[in-house]
Length: 147
Image (cartoon, rainbow, N blue to C red):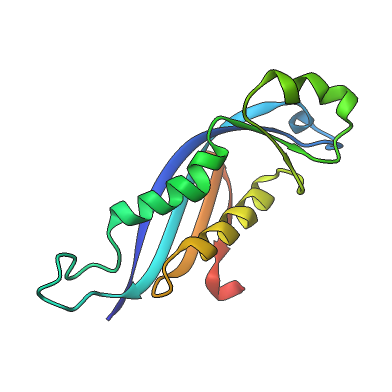
């Protein structure tokens, strides 16, 4: 029987959207909430210690922590082609600055996260849904069925 299980994570990230015509052009931060939903067959070996599970929630936590949380948490994301004279001190003054290839919008961050998770999950586990919530009322979603 196939089921889905989800786990929710949160982390703090700052970003600036270079060239944006609103407040988000300035460096600011969010408490992001990430929901990861996977699918797979239940382990049906009654002698297996994880009998009845798709995957141990601890295993999901380990993967997401390594691939997403450790990368994004307390990091400043700035697009690589941002004029460096404006941000030169930022890159050298702080330890965790990521000059991304993409504009660090919620949507682009979500795409990066999905790609990282798809590579890291075991072959028998399918990524079904990922939601990245930037604020209480604003989020981006990825559905496997749409892609």
